[in-house]
Image 1 (tube, protein in one colour):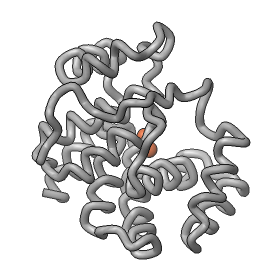
Image 2 (cartoon, helix red, strand yellow):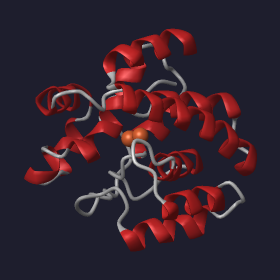
Image 3 (cartoon, rainbow, N blue to C red):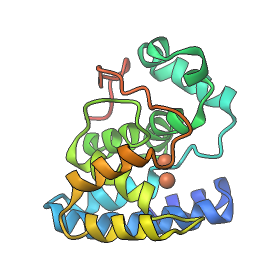
Length: 186
Ligand SMILES: [Fe+2]
Ligand SMILES: [Fe+2]
């Protein structure tokens, strides 16, 4: 399945975003070993996490209307037009359409873009890897955080990300409910 998804992503994503996706997949493999997570699930979550990244916002909203009407109803007007937040839940459902059927992977992709206050350990690792893998732009601070993550410093790196508001143009919604309105894969 990984190879088929890679080929699909190569067509769906701009080249730099595709490279970021491959880096994230490999970084999640390393993170899984550091944090005692399932390596296959972590790699697959990394591979698929930005599946819908290049999707037009109206298409994102219509995907959420189909699968996540509850989530959509909890977002403010500006948040509903913000692909930075929406691409996580939308990517999770697109991944399901491409055959990803593990709940842990689904939740990690869904939660990685900061929509939810409660996150699984796999989701937290994915979010931090996503924000520190640093492509297409690399910087020293992100590189340091990435190294810190890979030596067991997840909690500290999360605090640093919150302090510097990395990668976010405005505060993420952090919704209390993490239950999709449609049943996710079993
Ligand atoms: Fe993302
Ligand atoms: Fe990403």
